[in-house]
Image (cartoon, rainbow, N blue to C red; front, side, top):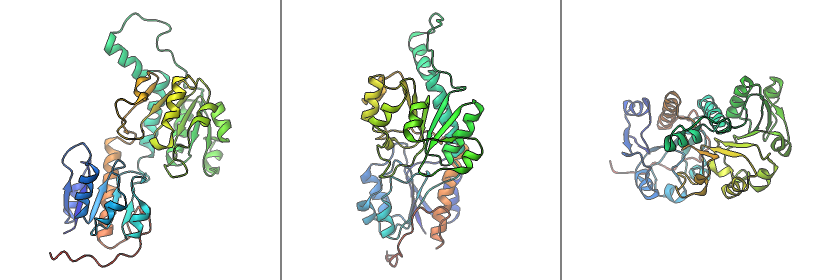
Length: 332
């Protein structure tokens, strides 16, 4: 019987699907994630692992997991996994693409609108101090309709955000590793250099994966090129922003605000300076948190695991593992 360690409870029928296929499911019992030591201990005896982006899996951990055949991330990103180590050890790593773009795009626009119209800030002030007298200057913010949106990273999510911007009559500029002729032909967005995009955009939305090349790429220089009236939105990965530079930009009024669903580290410590700014909206990495989408993601992860157990190529691999050594004899 294959043992699967699942690092957090997931919605939907994914775990029942694993059990019905004959797997023993070892579910982490609490909402708080396991520590590195607890994660290493549980993975050490597992044949498969269903993991989250907040679960750091490195070479030392994998060295102690000789039975492990597959790490199925319940996410599109997989920067939490040492891909080189997993590949070298014959371990498949998989993700869950193609199911969360629309949901994350919805949430990106929710953040953008909330930051522009100061929804969270006004709600918080009302709860703490009461409604107060109506004022024509209270909580005024920029219009979204007709504004210019800059999208950095035109993948599935970036394109879905651009489609939503069309309904707000926004001009959309984008920059990406490669140009997207289809996006341009549909009239969804115009290609622009990074500097031109930052200089014109009223809202800048980040949709780049976290790689060694993109880590903290959005820093002092990029923030300096933004309009002082602009708002930065990040639903990608916290690590793509230099958070110290962002703090300085907010503190010095270099940009009008930020809306962040991701941070580095996660969870962001409560004493972090980003929490001190009224014009910074922070949510706890919930961009894909619709019931339907999270259920689909978990089911995809389960299907990836079961395919590997059957000796098949998983549906959503992100690596090409080396041939495995013979399975260790456990004496069972």
